[in-house]
Length: 235
Length: 294
Image (cartoon, rainbow over all chains, first blue to last red; front, side, top):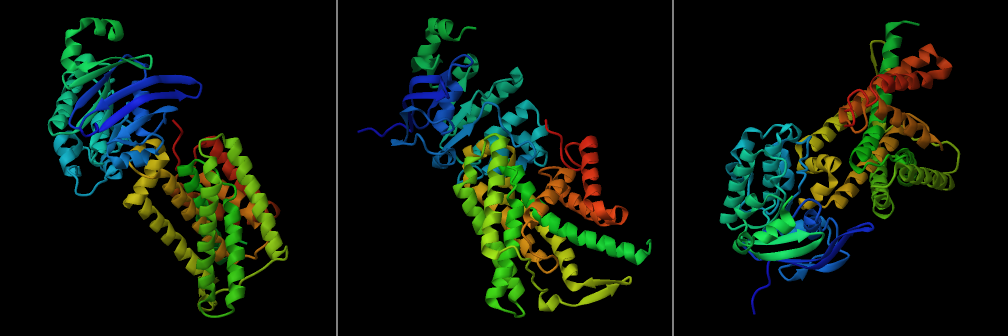
């Protein structure tokens, strides 16, 4: 018998009030993998992330973490299991300093991530340690959100559109840092619209459209099948 | 009338009143800043703190430590009551419209004040000063009771301790982060609903403590709850809702304006305070040290 995947989302249906967003989304992430959820704006990528995190519990379906169903648990409990969430809109605590933003998220004493280690990954943040989060640039805020989530020593990192709204050079730099996290063994589920950015990182790809999974396969299979890109991702 | 020692006496009495107001208003402001609920029943916690202190003094009987045990016991009792109210009732209000907050907390004011009338009647009650602080000393020709001096020292001490907790401790960082973005704090593994209870308990403790400590200088009467909540509300509006030092400054200004306003308009002393609040609302609607809403 093989061990269950780290995360298995099974047939989840999620709605906001009367508007249904997810129609039976299933996906799996194995330990050490970088899996990418690709799709245009508004197809349900963020909702999938929020459902996993417990922020919008599914109406139906299961979210399994190491085999155990965690759907319906409050977000702080899910976070404590080892799932770290980096929201799309960054959500920096604007009136807290960079150092305080990191400290608030510190969890799992003796884990690999400490303030020092996080500053090694993002050296720019060290210089900004005593600045208020609200005065940082978009790229700096994105680094801080990732750094903040790492401070909780997660086993799985949910990254929601990290490249959104950033200058190409910043996106390139960010891609390198996420690649470094992946090489260090962190499991990542990435939601993106930026295909090139994602393919540089992903082992496997799911393509989402209108709340359903339309394609799943290795990054190589996706790259070779031009029709999928045309059908679901071209603008 | 402009005798300097008389002016000094007035400003000292304003300062003492300000310390009590700060104790009450800081809890009101904290709950609003973090939980986003304007708790009109906060003044009721103050009144219940006063009655509880009176009751405990009756139970224990006179003695050197009676007052202090009663004050602490009352504050702790009100803290527990606040915790129960938050856990069982208040949490259903979060994220709802302000109208519900208003109706619910006002209903709580009515229910609790009637309960107090059933328990303690409508006769006014009083508690004497603790024996250790019963005397007075003279400063610039003004007689200052030791108890008032104690309050004048305690107010800033609590303000500093409170500020230190918010700025320099991890719990304080959680509280400030929860005020900014509750959802994100939860995704970082912090139990925000437990934190909310803690904040409410702390605010109730301060309210109950304020009520217990005021008993040696003011009589305990039904209606003291609505009187103080209006005053605390004015303080918070002047200083800026959710601003810590704003609340302190607001209380200081309120105390002075009230105690000198009595000299100018003896029969309408409260008028001067409302005039000040109106002026602040016109010139700086977000309060003296508050920040404009973005």
